[in-house]
Image (tube, rainbow, N blue to C red; front, top):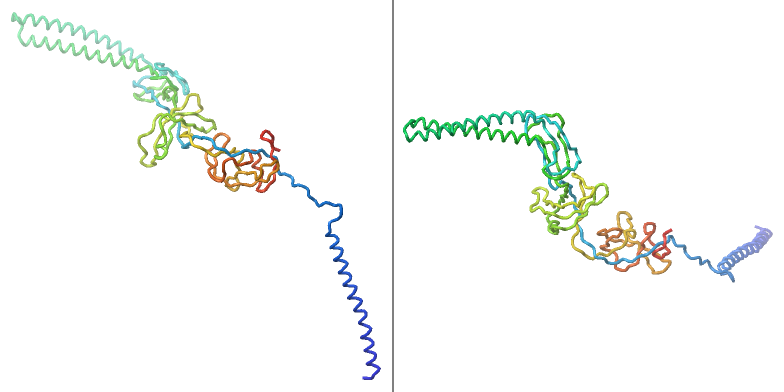
Length: 389
């Protein structure tokens, strides 16, 4: 290679170095400018305050405190409503036509009231016939007694043989027996006449009627059923452990199928348990005036001894995923955060709930509005008389 070519290449390399230096310098200057802008933007501006807007409460609520009360312990058991005692009114004569039906289901009747009457024409005819037969039998008996007396008078004089005297005595006894037999038949017929009128054996309410006008009776055929004195009772089924806690005279609150309630008192406790279910029966008298009806199935709440209970309003307890929570206030201020405290609930009485576990006494909880809150929400606490928005 000639000296001329070497010089030319060397000159070209020298011309490239200044251009590279310029490019690198411009790049570094750009980075420095960008960093300065970012740093300047990060500095707080003079006279401009940072954004310190307060959080807005999620809901207005009222507060209350958990407290202790004395509550009655209860036992809740199922049972059926039944008559205290039931009377069956049946036909006591056979072959008679039912002439009158004077009572319907639901009617209130009184002791001795005629509720049905059978046709008595045949019975009256039989009574007249037996009355005549009795008169005849009494006449024969009187004649036979007179003959016996005369025979005894002639016995001393020997006017009659022993056989004749014995025959007269036998005749007197026989005719008197005939009188007694006819009297018995007449008494039975008069009883049938009396039984032709079906009367209520006690005050009460007709619960069923099988009597049909014009039907011919069979002896023992059921005509009516009567709830004596319109008294109802509740038959509760309890375990042996539950029965041990019950005493005669304890109060029971029944919840009827229509949502109403009925009051009852324990009258009697079964002395034995069912061999299969191992349950005993409790008999409780229902107070008059309730909506309870025979055959109803009702849940009974039996009030036992008093015991202390930690109580909060039912509105303070919320259910989430099958668990019970109480919404607690973290601070006793107008604006406070809340947290959901898991609790175990017990008895209920009116609008209050017993807390068995998870909450202490005198703790601040949300009274109204708890159902709309989540853990950590801010709330505004209103006075107890305030309304919830």
